[in-house]
Image (cartoon, rainbow, N blue to C red; front, side, top):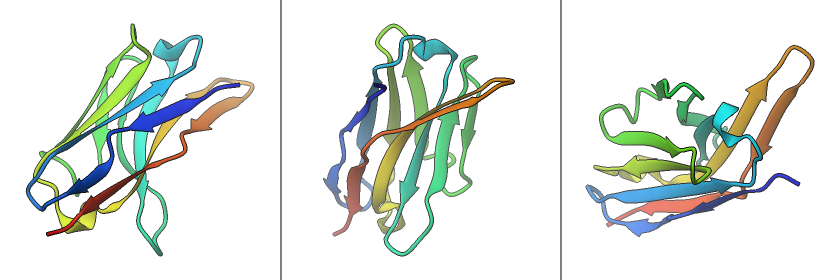
Length: 119
């Protein structure tokens, strides 16, 4: 059973920082694309950032220059450093592991961690 466990969420003031971490119980973590998604109340889940097995990164326009995704394949972890947080960053943040092959797609989600940005 694959598990993704997020940590690091919480309450922060605008302009503050948080670091989210996700540890995955994947036997071949390094070959998965790892991502962070978020879902605010009444909104659809959206991609925040992703990092491929080769280290290429993609960011949502709304977080470019403020958030940084990284991975540590030795520790089976993916991190999201969030700086200059804004109230609109408030959401539940989910860790995702994805790998597509010719015959199937492997897609796993964590349980989510709440990030609240408020003064």
